[in-house]
Length: 62
Image 1: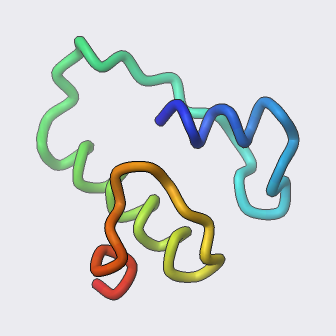
Image 2: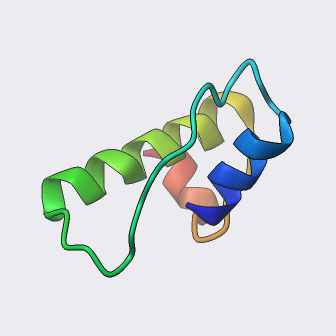
Image 3: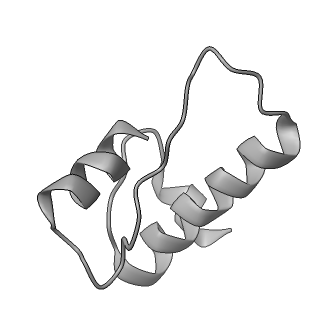
């Protein structure tokens, strides 16, 4: 999340990251929401080769 927001705030990858994510790690968002976030990160990793901390190479193939 921090990496995504860092890219957003710096203006890097503007064509890919169009908004920041307001996320509190202490908040319980539920497994469905967490998985949807994961899917977005894995897709961006796969489609644009934009590496995010916490995703392995195999995550980009799913």
